[in-house]
Image (cartoon, rainbow, N blue to C red; front, top):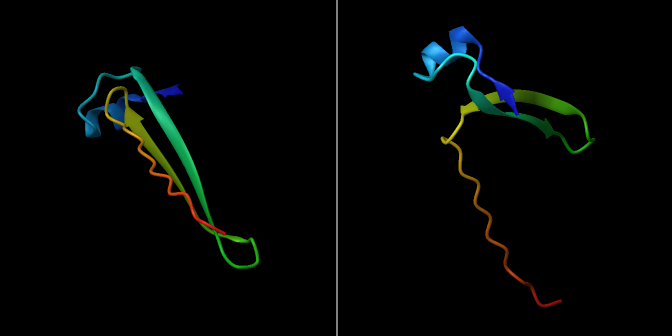
Length: 58
């Protein structure tokens, strides 16, 4: 968790310094080397995470 800086809050139409979820993602190649890194901010109440698991028969 973090808070939204004023410039980001304005762009996201949210209140400055309001709570936000900060997500850091690293995309790795076959050698495990990062080729892209992203940081996203989601204002409070604007993020949903959903996961579906499927059981495999091995």
